[in-house]
Image (tube, rainbow, N blue to C red; front, side):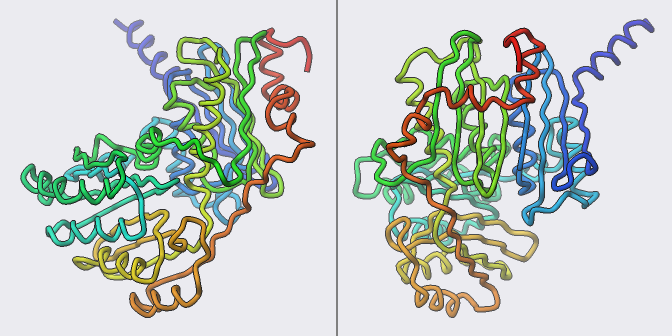
Length: 430
């Protein structure tokens, strides 16, 4: 019937997000606005698309009004410029407009991913890639993070290199390496790559269970407060800004089964301040001090995993069997610890990025070690960049109350969120 066709068209229009990208509103950033029906995970989907493009979110406003959801992001590219590339703008509109990334799942077809977890130590990554090279496995892509003595790694292989017999042999050889001499858990799990559509999110999940209570170094400032009157818990994050910071925070809250109803994000002079008004999936706020501490610790861990200090080495060279094994062995022989790694191949070229420190995480890398690595792998193929983000500031006695409570979240509630809460009748004035 004709009226059914019209009704179906209306439902499709209501369920399809509306995406507006505007370069005229803000003089320093491109505005990306997303309006859609509210559903679980919609905020993470939006932030993930921007993070995958290495865009910086300078400001953002998040509001969920009943069954409707609106995000406004002020973004720039990695150099702080507005978005002018039509292909990037088109990709954002297509991805956010359908909540799908056009080519990602297709690119994972025919691949198997190995999930590796274990106790980290100098040379472990090298040993892992050496085993895979010895077994004739071609690594097409890999991601590795280490944090507080634990390692999580995703290695993507072609299906023909990961049949059941070979995977069993890989598990047999890698499991002892990943466990090391400690009693900590470690192991290998193989699965179709399409079941892990986003590597960074999976790495967060793999490391989620390895939270460490020992915090000798300064940590990001994360406070969790109760706003019982309105049925919200207020999460406030303050730390130096960096790429993908918003993604790491939203990803962690989502995987901990919290929903973000309102939020504001602001950056100023390299410092980021993020505020989120959250509830459990069942609509209830956080009720216990222990749960507040757990949320705070998990967010601190998620932020720290990518807050790297050391040297970034980018290798671009023709791909060949055993390349990763040779390069990472060179790092090990020169006393360098691989804190993070991003490995990819495009055609016949390998593009590998390694973040390295001394033999202890955070230890200074000596210039002699860098030069030795460059001579071994090729001076023209290796780009070295010192990577030293601002360290987190230890809490001073005078500002203890501001960092750990005292209404910090409610006092700094952004005007955009205030306006929405006012129209909803949740506050009297703004």
